[in-house]
Length: 317
Image (cartoon, rainbow, N blue to C red; front, side):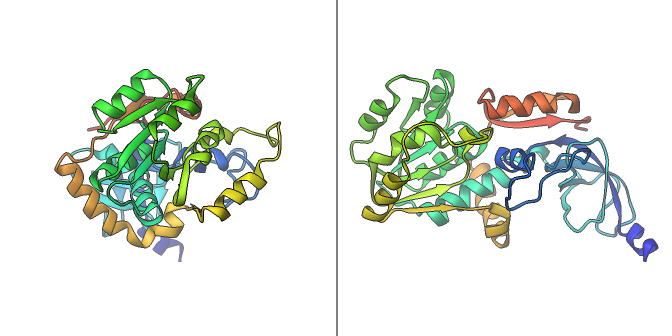
């Protein structure tokens, strides 16, 4: 039995890591609060997807030098059975993109918007964290589907990128003191779809603008990941519940691997086509060195990143 297990084993050298799991999954597993995944114990390897090269293999489906997508976590090497390893071939054009636009973030954007958001031409779509790997993809898919897309991002540079590069109709800086007023002006016909990545004051500004039968794909709540207690102030749950009821709003959370894993081939085919045709644009922020991963991760949670954050652990070729 032990011999068989070893024969089905491949040794991986992560080349570009950290990226495949969204911040909410990694951050959530640092807490022992009940969740959909067990917490990472002290001393264990931090979870995370990796794009790796096979160093050696006794598995018939993998050979030395193959590029693979795995879930090796924050470490230099890993030994895997091959069960949860996807072979990317000998020479993929953009290996790290399997952690971003062609991986979990792109998949979350695709299924969250199309299956839960169900966009229709002419509708208004508001996207939080508009230049992150999920939000940027959501907005561009929204444009492909004929929506008017309003992004929300942190800072003038990100907002300019959302409009000039990603093709959003408008993007608002959530740091502005009059952000809520700006959003109301930007959405004169109300909001039909709100893709939620942030929560907090952005959601507070969105709530009164939601139209009847609006849809809210709930992908993340980055503003509250570090919270240890409920926020101060009045209880707003009755307002939220009443709005959902009176306007018949659909608010649905989702975990991409658990809810939509069986549709990965559909996503890969469609997204691959859009990327090849340059209908979808993608931006990465790469940091070199595994030792930089903790500070890079903290910066991502604080909104200091611009695009998909990946950490390069080893040589790319």
